[in-house]
Amino acid sequence: MIELDSEGKRKAGYGKWEKIPSRSDLDNYLLGTLNKGWFRASPDKKLFVKASIFRDRLEIFDYQTKEFVVVDGPRLELPKFEISGSGANSALIFNPEEAYGHRDIAFGKSYIYDLYGGYNEMHIQQTNVIAKTVYVLTTKGDMVAKLDLDRSVRSITVDESLGKIHGITTDEDPGIAVFDIPKELLKN
Image: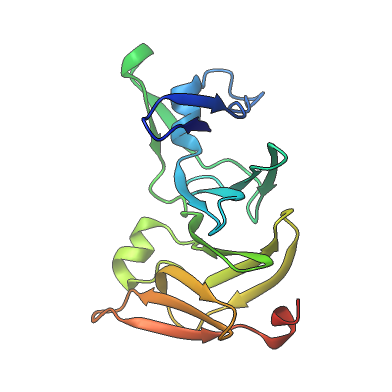
């Protein structure tokens, strides 16, 4: 992660791509593709989370301590892919049967809400179902709850003061769905 000042000049850099021992053929560009996903910041800009779409990995960065917490799962294996081309012209080509992973991140006061997919492109095209699971994690990456939604959404936002998760639906006539956050999660 790179921190820039208000003029776009580099202030600092944090972390490095973790090399994968079984895949020494992956350079930084290809590792970036493998770890591609959503990048979100908490409202107070103290936590930053990158949620990978191809690989089931969350990277939580605490800006105050400058430390990363990496959360792998629910699938621990790497997605199937091939490297096409070589050198500067190489790219990862993912097997179309591979399911997508994390779809979005939202922040509450005490928790991180992780919208998780688990569906491949063919399933999405046939059903319009993108994601129906929300994992609730502490800021240290410990899972405290798994919420199963009754409909598919593509993105979420959270309002813990109202006890609600709002999501953009993926049905034929998209709208906003509202889900209750279990009361035991709101006690913190």
